Amino acid sequence: MSEVTKLGKFEVRRELGKGAMGVVYEGFDPMIERTVAIKTIRAENLQGEDAQEQLARFRREAQAAGRLTHPNVVSIYDFGVDDGTYYIAMEFVKGRELQDILGQNERFGIPGVVQIMSQLLEALDYSHRNGVVHRDIKPANIILLEDGTVKVADFGIARVESSNLTQAGMVLGTPSYMSPEQFMGQTVDGRSDLFSAGVILYQLLTGGEAFHRLDHDDHAQGAAGAAAASVDAERSGAARLRCRRAEGAREAS
Image (cartoon, rainbow, N blue to C red; front, side):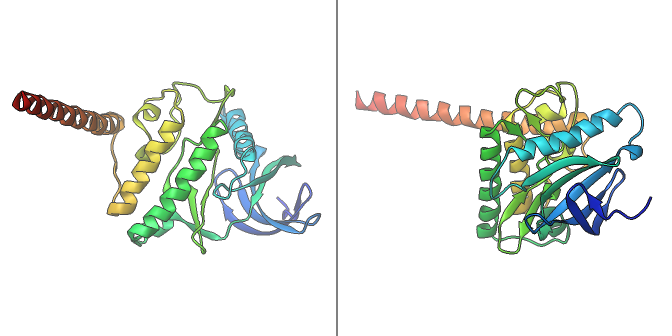
């Protein structure tokens, strides 16, 4: 295939990375003189029964993130197709993936953890209020800029309200960061993203993964067990409080 020099109205400047289905380029919009990142998929690289589904998910990424305008979400500018190449033009972000930082055993102090998590939660709150559930919150999809700004990226498997693209029974996402409901293929809402954010918080604080190399049953039972233990603890605390109140009432009488 000849070298790509243009996609739609965007000039292609250089290749930033390459995957199994496509290439990510640095591009330029000459109309408004803005540098962009261009994520591509070539239809000829998609094979089998999943080809149309993969294209639909690529389009869904543009639609999901495209409805969001928030300082902690990577902005989407355009979606199109040019000579068999589907592309998404998005905000060009200069930063590091949180996954790379954690992979090099770099740690954050408590103020740094608070800064990251507060911005992540603000992005999720905004997304959920606009009907978008990300469903793949993980360190690889969180970008840290030099000034400390957090950017949430990759809405490729996001669930958008009123969409029937993703349905119950389909397991999509990254197992180590999934909620039990998502892991078991159930329909999820914004609370699943919050569970994933909690797993990231655990990793930021401890330096280790909460769920590492677990199989399907272990993950679901482990996560559900942690939740059950929390509920049991709350019930036990409430029971002790009721007992103390009852004892106090008897002494007063």
